Amino acid sequence: MENQLHELRTLAARAENRRTETGIPRVAMVQGAIPEHQLAAVYEPMINLILQGSKSMTVGDRTLRYDPATYFVMSIELPAVGSVHPATSGEPYLAVALTLDPAVLAPLLTDLPKPAAPPEQSREAGFSVAAVTPELMDAWVRMLRLMDRPADIPALSPVYEREILYRVLQGPHGWMLREIAAPDTAMARVSLAIQWIRRAFAEPLRVEDMARTASMSVSAFHRHFKAVTTLSPLQYQKRVRLLQARTLLVANAKSVTSAAFDVGYESATQFSRDYVRVFGLSPARDAARILAQIRGRAD
Image 1 (cartoon, rainbow, N blue to C red):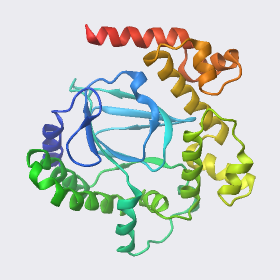
Image 2 (cartoon, helix red, strand yellow):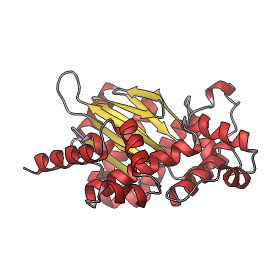
Image 3 (tube, rainbow, N blue to C red):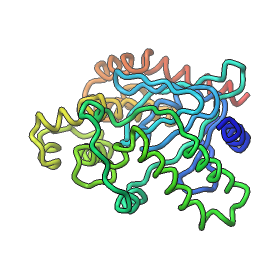
Image 4 (cartoon, rainbow, N blue to C red):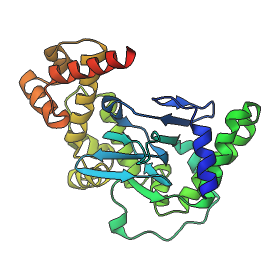
């Protein structure tokens, strides 16, 4: 497996210090130091394979760290804060990722026997870390080799994507992929609620309406939502609002008050309190720090 890891590192070393598209559908890579503010975002469902260095991800009150030859499965859209670190020997952080598409997963599931259900206690948060297998690593190698053979991408990338998904389905967190591809699971219903929140994050949130749409009681909906995301629906909405406000402050040069109202807060004071709890600095100081980092990287 060491030879496979070495080849993957060589292939992915052409990545930049940001998400770098590979030309292969849904496959991206990244290398080097990434500013913290770029790692605070709502992450799309994905399989993320660490090749060099390490990364930590915090969702709600839960933090996971993953190292080379481990992969991270995020089965649902989650607001998270991350940080990346170089290898102890000094080589830069390096990773590749496959964005999950339920439309690709669903046909694969129909061809596979249904496995025994895992213990209920393991079916909780919609994100986790697992050790990569030689078979999964091999599928990733063949996928990234397509960067040098772009004419082969249309014919072969769907085959290799299917194999990557199959290998993950066979692993300890395969149940997550099954849950998001099946239409009537608790995770699928939570996913619909999340899409609702993301579309209308600035609007008042009525958990009762969301629970009714999910065909659950309010208590059951709240319980499932928090089990999957580690956040309550209102906390999730708040994180989405704060991340959007951060973008308005930095990219759109909005004032603190204007950003607060734009994302749905009725009180700029409450907005600032919530902002400090999540990001550690006041909105104005945090925006100034990020802008200084951006200017420093440009110089």
